[in-house]
Image 1 (cartoon, one colour):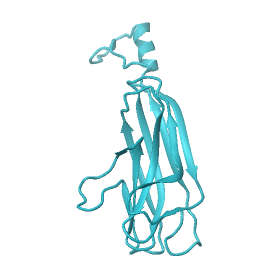
Image 2 (cartoon, one colour; image 1 turned 135 degrees about the vertical axis):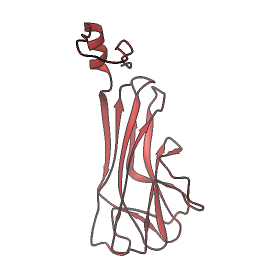
Image 3 (spheres, one colour; image 1 turned 45 degrees about the vertical axis):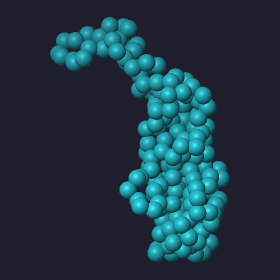
Length: 172
């Protein structure tokens, strides 16, 4: 669906939309499809470089190059020592990541300074992939020392978490 360009620039009292304008408006800015991946089990890595978190990957095929993709990510993350970092990726390109870190940049991190905690790394990102080809969105994690753990505390197995990645195609 295209952005309704036939609509008036401003509305004033008494404006009446034509049938064509109403149809344009009805088709714009709708959720066209939703894809979700969930993860209830655990994942861990000692890698100092980003690796894919199993089960937290989704593929969506936009219906138009003008479509936007709204990505919602919520990951339960912990670290055994040092820090664990998670990031959001489209294909092989990191998106929704910070640039202010002098050593590590990601979407969010967990610190082993709080060993009895799981950190919720959550973000919303409106992407413009400009394609009608299948596009994969996924979560990656790394540890700067020790182990990065998804869906479990860093120091014990007593508590489990739940993580998701959801993508929605929005007509533009």
